[in-house]
Image 1 (cartoon, rainbow, N blue to C red):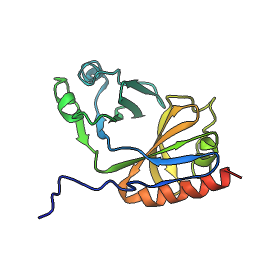
Image 2: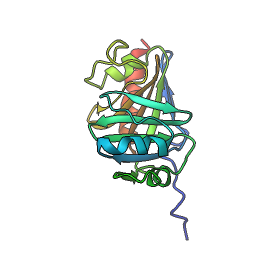
Image 3: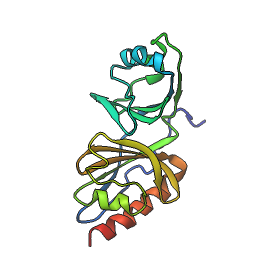
Image 4: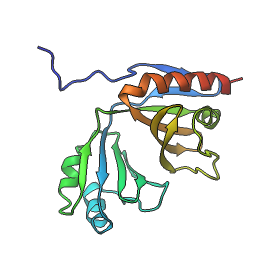
Length: 182
Protein backbone atom coordinates (compact mmCIF):
# COMPACT_ATOMS: atom_id res chain seq x y z
CA UNK A 1 0.00 0.00 0.00
CA UNK A 2 1.29 3.45 -0.87
CA UNK A 3 2.17 5.82 1.94
CA UNK A 4 -0.19 8.74 1.37
CA UNK A 5 1.57 10.86 4.01
CA UNK A 6 4.58 11.23 1.69
CA UNK A 7 3.84 13.21 -1.43
CA UNK A 8 6.01 13.76 -4.42
CA UNK A 9 6.73 17.46 -4.73
CA UNK A 10 5.08 19.05 -7.74
CA UNK A 11 7.75 20.33 -10.13
CA UNK A 12 10.41 18.27 -8.31
CA UNK A 13 13.78 18.86 -9.94
CA UNK A 14 12.38 21.25 -12.51
CA UNK A 15 14.69 24.08 -13.61
CA UNK A 16 14.18 26.81 -16.16
CA UNK A 17 15.07 30.32 -17.11
CA UNK A 18 17.45 32.11 -19.42
CA UNK A 19 20.73 34.00 -19.36
CA UNK A 20 19.23 36.61 -17.00
CA UNK A 21 16.66 34.62 -15.00
CA UNK A 22 16.82 31.40 -13.02
CA UNK A 23 13.71 29.38 -12.15
CA UNK A 24 13.98 26.78 -9.41
CA UNK A 25 11.46 24.86 -7.39
CA UNK A 26 11.73 25.80 -3.74
CA UNK A 27 12.30 22.97 -1.27
CA UNK A 28 9.30 21.68 0.68
CA UNK A 29 8.10 24.08 3.38
CA UNK A 30 5.34 24.19 5.95
CA UNK A 31 2.61 26.77 5.43
CA UNK A 32 -0.48 27.94 7.23
CA UNK A 33 -3.28 30.17 6.07
CA UNK A 34 -3.75 32.31 9.17
CA UNK A 35 -6.86 34.34 9.98
CA UNK A 36 -7.12 36.40 13.16
CA UNK A 37 -8.57 39.61 14.59
CA UNK A 38 -6.22 42.46 15.50
CA UNK A 39 -6.48 41.73 19.23
CA UNK A 40 -4.95 38.25 18.69
CA UNK A 41 -1.85 39.39 16.81
CA UNK A 42 0.44 40.00 19.79
CA UNK A 43 -0.16 36.48 21.14
CA UNK A 44 0.21 34.93 17.66
CA UNK A 45 3.40 36.88 17.02
CA UNK A 46 4.84 35.56 20.27
CA UNK A 47 3.77 31.98 19.53
CA UNK A 48 5.13 32.06 15.97
CA UNK A 49 8.37 33.81 16.88
CA UNK A 50 7.95 36.72 14.48
CA UNK A 51 5.91 39.88 14.28
CA UNK A 52 2.74 39.28 12.27
CA UNK A 53 2.62 42.30 9.88
CA UNK A 54 -0.34 44.66 9.95
CA UNK A 55 0.51 46.89 6.99
CA UNK A 56 -0.76 45.99 3.50
CA UNK A 57 1.74 44.48 1.06
CA UNK A 58 4.35 43.75 3.76
CA UNK A 59 5.98 40.76 5.40
CA UNK A 60 8.04 39.92 8.42
CA UNK A 61 10.79 37.37 8.73
CA UNK A 62 12.64 35.53 11.47
CA UNK A 63 15.14 32.90 10.37
CA UNK A 64 13.46 30.48 7.98
CA UNK A 65 9.96 31.74 8.83
CA UNK A 66 8.04 34.50 7.01
CA UNK A 67 4.56 35.96 7.55
CA UNK A 68 3.05 37.56 4.45
CA UNK A 69 0.18 40.05 4.79
CA UNK A 70 -2.67 39.08 2.43
CA UNK A 71 -5.59 41.03 3.85
CA UNK A 72 -6.78 42.93 6.94
CA UNK A 73 -7.10 39.69 8.93
CA UNK A 74 -5.27 37.18 6.71
CA UNK A 75 -1.66 36.00 6.36
CA UNK A 76 0.31 33.21 4.74
CA UNK A 77 2.97 31.96 7.14
CA UNK A 78 5.77 29.95 5.51
CA UNK A 79 8.47 28.05 7.37
CA UNK A 80 11.24 26.85 5.06
CA UNK A 81 12.61 24.63 7.86
CA UNK A 82 9.32 22.72 8.07
CA UNK A 83 8.22 23.66 11.61
CA UNK A 84 4.73 22.64 12.71
CA UNK A 85 3.08 26.05 12.37
CA UNK A 86 -0.37 24.82 13.40
CA UNK A 87 1.03 23.50 16.69
CA UNK A 88 2.97 26.71 17.28
CA UNK A 89 -0.05 28.93 16.62
CA UNK A 90 -2.28 26.75 18.81
CA UNK A 91 -0.12 27.77 21.75
CA UNK A 92 -1.10 31.43 21.30
CA UNK A 93 -4.19 31.15 23.48
CA UNK A 94 -5.93 33.72 21.25
CA UNK A 95 -8.78 33.59 18.76
CA UNK A 96 -7.51 32.58 15.30
CA UNK A 97 -7.78 30.04 12.51
CA UNK A 98 -4.63 28.30 11.26
CA UNK A 99 -5.14 25.93 8.34
CA UNK A 100 -2.22 23.83 7.15
CA UNK A 101 -1.84 24.42 3.39
CA UNK A 102 1.63 22.88 3.06
CA UNK A 103 0.56 20.29 0.47
CA UNK A 104 -1.70 22.69 -1.41
CA UNK A 105 1.04 25.13 -2.37
CA UNK A 106 4.24 24.95 -4.39
CA UNK A 107 6.84 27.70 -4.50
CA UNK A 108 8.96 28.74 -7.45
CA UNK A 109 12.00 30.97 -6.94
CA UNK A 110 12.49 33.51 -9.73
CA UNK A 111 15.92 35.12 -9.46
CA UNK A 112 18.44 37.10 -11.44
CA UNK A 113 18.59 40.53 -13.08
CA UNK A 114 15.62 39.66 -15.34
CA UNK A 115 13.35 38.40 -12.52
CA UNK A 116 11.21 41.54 -12.36
CA UNK A 117 10.71 41.62 -16.14
CA UNK A 118 9.85 37.91 -16.14
CA UNK A 119 7.12 38.34 -13.53
CA UNK A 120 5.83 41.54 -15.13
CA UNK A 121 5.07 39.54 -18.29
CA UNK A 122 2.13 37.88 -16.53
CA UNK A 123 1.42 39.98 -13.44
CA UNK A 124 -0.55 43.24 -13.71
CA UNK A 125 0.98 44.67 -10.53
CA UNK A 126 3.77 47.28 -10.60
CA UNK A 127 6.80 45.25 -9.52
CA UNK A 128 9.36 48.04 -9.74
CA UNK A 129 11.61 48.21 -6.70
CA UNK A 130 10.08 51.55 -5.68
CA UNK A 131 6.52 50.13 -5.68
CA UNK A 132 7.29 46.56 -4.64
CA UNK A 133 10.42 46.75 -2.43
CA UNK A 134 12.31 43.90 -0.78
CA UNK A 135 9.94 42.34 1.76
CA UNK A 136 6.80 43.24 -0.19
CA UNK A 137 4.18 40.51 -0.50
CA UNK A 138 0.77 40.33 -2.10
CA UNK A 139 -1.86 38.03 -3.47
CA UNK A 140 -2.13 38.67 -7.19
CA UNK A 141 -2.38 36.81 -10.48
CA UNK A 142 0.16 35.49 -12.92
CA UNK A 143 -1.47 34.76 -16.23
CA UNK A 144 -4.75 33.19 -15.16
CA UNK A 145 -3.53 31.69 -11.89
CA UNK A 146 -3.77 33.20 -8.42
CA UNK A 147 -0.37 33.48 -6.75
CA UNK A 148 1.17 34.96 -3.64
CA UNK A 149 4.23 36.97 -4.61
CA UNK A 150 7.01 37.74 -2.13
CA UNK A 151 10.08 39.82 -2.99
CA UNK A 152 12.85 38.22 -0.93
CA UNK A 153 15.75 40.19 -2.42
CA UNK A 154 16.18 42.95 -4.97
CA UNK A 155 16.40 40.38 -7.76
CA UNK A 156 14.70 37.33 -6.18
CA UNK A 157 11.01 36.53 -5.76
CA UNK A 158 9.14 33.61 -4.21
CA UNK A 159 6.01 32.70 -6.19
CA UNK A 160 3.53 30.60 -4.19
CA UNK A 161 0.84 28.88 -6.23
CA UNK A 162 -1.53 25.97 -5.82
CA UNK A 163 0.03 22.67 -6.93
CA UNK A 164 -2.79 22.18 -9.44
CA UNK A 165 -1.61 25.35 -11.25
CA UNK A 166 2.13 24.77 -10.82
CA UNK A 167 2.83 23.32 -14.29
CA UNK A 168 0.98 26.24 -15.90
CA UNK A 169 2.72 28.88 -13.76
CA UNK A 170 6.16 27.32 -14.24
CA UNK A 171 5.66 27.03 -18.02
CA UNK A 172 4.48 30.63 -18.31
CA UNK A 173 7.38 31.83 -16.15
CA UNK A 174 9.81 29.89 -18.34
CA UNK A 175 8.43 31.49 -21.52
CA UNK A 176 8.62 34.94 -19.93
CA UNK A 177 12.18 34.25 -18.73
CA UNK A 178 13.23 33.39 -22.27
CA UNK A 179 11.74 36.70 -23.47
CA UNK A 180 13.45 38.62 -20.67
CA UNK A 181 16.76 37.04 -21.66
CA UNK A 182 16.69 38.65 -25.10
